[in-house]
Structures are given as structure tokens and as C-alpha cells.
Image (cartoon, rainbow, N blue to C red; front, side, top):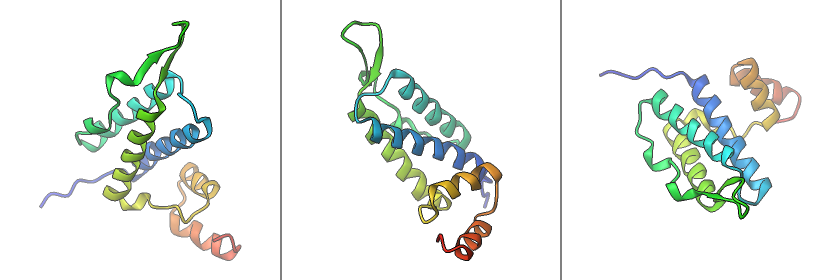
Length: 132
């Protein structure tokens, strides 16, 4: 049986970008600018191509974008964007269990990602310094 080899680093990179958008939306608490939605759609398209999977269900509907009252700026409806991001994050965590790293502090996970340090090394260090 053929087993598809995946680049965990690339999946983690795209996943971390989704987490970043989700956290930004939680802090914003309002409709984000169109660029945020464009960035999300770019990530969905990259994941779809990279994983060779149909991720159409996670894409934003056409009516998610709207113009400001002045008609000069474009925004995305947060009530349509946030659920799609959450669904995709959970889908990825179920499909790729190695993404379940919530036990590590965010700063450590970011350092791990940037330096490409194996997770078990970081966990040993955290235990040693009582941060885990």
C-alpha cells in the first residue's frame, strides 16, 4: 500500500498562520479588512495543493466580502470567516495529530518552528527548567 510522505514543517507553517489569523480575529472582535480574508484563502489554496486534498468546504462564500459605507474599503464578515478558520484548524488537528502541541507554550512552539528543533528536545528542556 502506498503511503503519502508529507512535509510536516510545511503543514506546521500553514497551520501556524491559521492560528495567527484566528488569534488576530479574536483580539479584533470586528469585521477584518479584505486582506485578512485573502490571506486565509491563500492558505486554504496552498494546503489544498500541498496536501492534494479538496478543501472547498473551508473556502469563504462569495457573500463574505462587503464594501464599507463609503465604498472605499472592503471587509470580510467575521461571522463567516472565523467559523471557517476554526473548522479548518480542527480538521488539520484530527488529520495530522502532530499539530496537537498545545501543551507547549506559544513562545517555545514558535522558537521550535523557527529553529526546526525537534519537539522532544524542547520538551526535555522545558521539564529541566520547570516550564512544562
